[in-house]
Image (cartoon, rainbow, N blue to C red; front, side, top):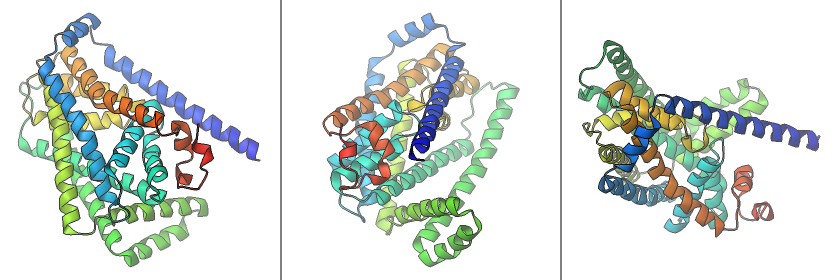
Length: 359
């Protein structure tokens, strides 16, 4: 029985890897198919280094800042040293680039748990909460773009219709996101109400699905409950807006490096497409990210194919290469391995399966 279970798990992992790599290849083909490679090379070589330097500086600031924000999500559970949170963040993002299936979402809390003694469950729940907060911020930026009137000039009728559809979608998604966030916040603040909601759900679903789903929701609510005070809300809100505004500035700077001159607010729109591209389950968002960013520039703002492709390539490289290199370096000094961390995340608490995480 154990042998067959291992075979099924290996087969499923192999299938996920194949799908992930296949999607990356498909979207890279879509990205490059209308780009003149010679023109792209000339555009990249002519980049303004000062703007690229600004974009790189934002990355070097944002990842320590992101890890500090993570410690704020965890400070009611346990004090986490900033350096440990930063190294775990880098290793987690490196895992997302080097491994399929969003492995970094498991690796990051697993590393922090192993290195600090923090229980794995709240560490993992904090990642889910962090992702929800980031989603709210990105949706908010898109809504601001939608109501701000920063539409591209000289849009074709087809592109105008697409943009209007996206604008209407922004309001619907924004309202739905805020409602879900408010509902989850209410359940987190009132555990007895959560029991009344989750109890019937647990009884009606099949036992295996119910136990996992309810456990996941309860873990998430526990993470959300870490934002307990007005000060917590203020710190998380301000830090999140600052972090994502810096991400928008990074897009703006890279675009300027390739002489793509658009209003700053236009990159709220580009950022939304970048997040949609990263949602495609490829290693590090390769392919999906590039195709989405390039399309947002060429399909709506009429940017030429070469500078749009250069912007997509450079923003991805600047955002992911430094943190991946840092993650690999931290991993090399930690005595851990990515694959074992991804596989054994839930047992990554100190004293549980310790030797299995060693090389």
